[in-house]
Length: 403
Ligand SMILES: Cc1ncc(COP(=O)(O)O)c(C=O)c1O
Image: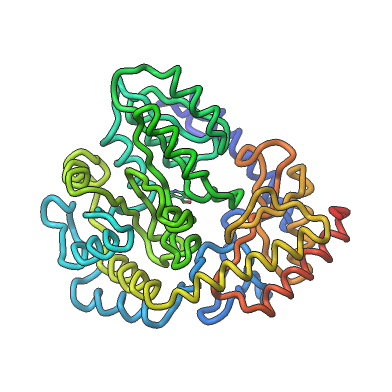
């Protein structure tokens, strides 16, 4: 390595990463990160190194990845508009498809207007930074997604974290917060590693009592909770409203991009104040068209949502009855708790041998001794797939001493 020009200062960081990664990657049975899977277009199976395995850790909740209608919409957009928009939305980058997609998102989210970003990450960073800054306070759940954390850091606002789903703790934090400036509370609707749901009624009440805005990230809620997949407000019977709703187009919706929905005033402000929207290229035509078509399919086919909910419950019940812990999960995401990081890796390997892919999530992404496989049920999983998965998870659990 060149020892001049500052490389010598950087070298310890590079070495630390090399050491950490080689320890993980030298043992093929433990190699779970950056593994290339080929997921079949019309099933929940994937090819991994020539082996056909049932994918139980995907994110395409609605099972629309590879759906021929979505693919056709993306192809038609490429034919019409080409592959990129060659600019930011404020200048040459806007095409009619963006406006159609934003109208569809706004209507889906039951808000006046919406804005789409290049990713969910950019939507969080841009929205938080466009709403709070120095002199304001933003309060976030300890388990909030990294893009929320990064948006808070970049905003320059005072950032306060409260214990996961602990509304009393949030209230104490709000009481102690600077009374001046904007107060913004940001939570995930569904937590991506735990599959539990934010307590919206209690959060709304505390935010109202302390004059705070409430923003939710619906990344794992869209298409998953609520009778028709409408997200957290629908899950709680539309009795409580959030102030700002945000989500991605990269999970249940098989595309890329992020969105924010709210009042015309709020969206008008964010168009100019959200820096990742203003200073980053517009969503590519194929991505916008795929997202638009998927949202339309979700409206027409709510049975996909029902399927996810009933099959996830079946799997959870089978696991719990056998003594496997799944924390407070009540959605498509089911954490199968293994304990130590080593236990999670061993369990993942045993699951693979039993025919299913369950990807481990270890520290520091999750607390000590709560390493797990992050399982997710999708509309692609047939009831027979769920039976097979339950059997495989239990067989592997017995082999590794988990139960
Ligand atoms: C809760 C949550 N918010 C935001 C994001 C970022 O979304 P994207 O991948 O579209 O940038 C993710 C992605 O994992 C997420 O889980």
